[in-house]
Length: 290
Image 1 (cartoon, rainbow, N blue to C red):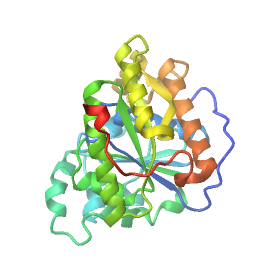
Image 2 (image 1 turned 120 degrees about the vertical axis):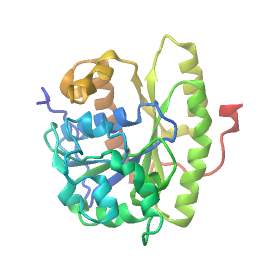
Image 3 (image 1 turned 90 degrees about the horizontal axis):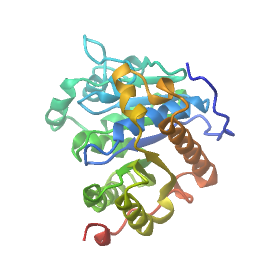
Image 4 (image 1 turned 180 degrees about the vertical axis):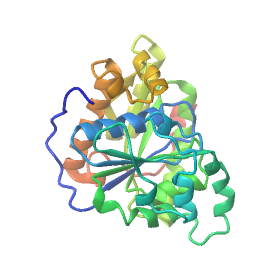
């Protein structure tokens, strides 16, 4: 159990969940860690949360003590149409949060989806049936910009981008922004960038500060004030099948994710996806990768 509830004035989301795709085509930037722990923090803020693991590696599933193996329904079956989200969702170790697990079969879904009707809308069509059951639906995307991530972007109201505070992680940011722009133009007109969160931040490293300044200069208000620090407890938690908020609620990593959840909720209250937390998805960031 989470040792204390997090008090945060609620946002009236009506009868429809907000859907966030947690996406970055670069691996190793803390994407799954952010998906798992932000979902947990939102649940600690008394929100009804569904986390959809859309990564064939299934790290979000194992990080929540859930397995997609053994014949159980999972996100592969959801995309291929042999199970609904309601059938695939299972309770997690976090009170108030369910998870749709993943398994290795999802790695073949990119090929299997090619010949299916509405191949880029498979997840969006499934989410319609469960939006009234949750306040937030988070989708953990694979580290690639293929059909799996495209399904997440078409289904989402907004994209939350974890960005490691190091030089090479910046190279893909302009590419991701252009991809979101294309999805917005052709497939999902309501899609916005809800925010960018700097992860694995080491305040002793001057490069982290330089990267943070460059990202904030380009993306402005889209970059969250909260940064996620490098923290050994965050790294240890998945091996215990728990998010860090359950593993060690008082550590710096847990408190950062609680702060991020509060900031997400504040941005939502300030104007939803078109308020201060959302920015136009246009242009490139040559200064970041020069």
